[in-house]
Image 1: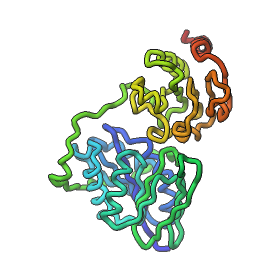
Image 2 (image 1 turned 90 degrees about the horizontal axis):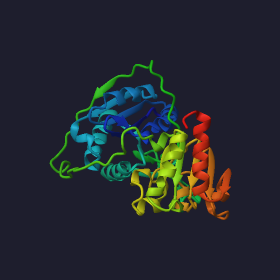
Image 3 (image 1 turned 180 degrees about the vertical axis):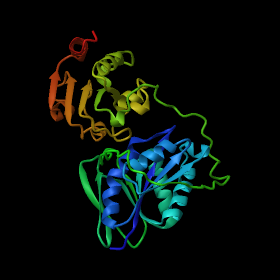
Image 4 (image 1 turned 90 degrees about the vertical axis):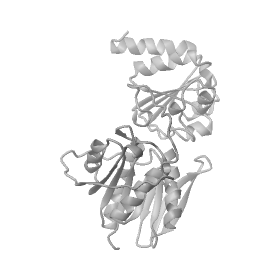
Length: 331
């Protein structure tokens, strides 16, 4: 097998890397070793030198830094230009992007540009002398299917969040960081970002939180979500919600977990008033321990749970929160 490179595309928000991007190093390092080539990290954003250093600590042999104010906005055409420049600079055989909103836009755009293969939303990736083989969920995660692309062409892969673990950082590694010049056309600048809606400062990131407390429509109202917030605070956890709750406007979309929201894999998932529609469970089924509070013993999530408390959440949650505060000395 000829030596070939793997390129990992790291998205940033503000001055931080998206957690889904950092997981790509867990996928990319073994693939680069199998190919006998380099693992190249491309960091895209504005004011993200620290993220570039982190990419080196996570296993990249070489880091390309596309740092420009125009790249700090999540515009697919601009990010695609940065990836094009990185491909020209590193000539990778395999390009990994996170299956985020931006990654899902950029990957097919570039695959069409390069007349290359594109494997979508993958949870496992393997290579041999002739083929890139990936596994991806279909039919709302009811089935897994195998997809393949010939190695005679360049291959773009979007990797599902939560499919790979972030490697342990090794701060002692000294990896060269190369500034990458990215040329943007007037057409690339045609999309104007007027506002970015961010979660309030200090909130725990759902995608890497070890404990997540999720409220469903059974909570009853936006005002009642204070019960979920208080329970999450007592556990030092993050707050999540279902699509129904987000659609009702009770909670912001960035808290939504499921097929059209975030995929999470916490050590503890605690569902409050969540029935467990497939659209939601595809985003949390990798949780280590699932605990559910619901009055319906036949709810799908109750049957899926490791531990289920069947009863009135309006009685159970305040008592549980109070007891947790007493045990932790924060009552």
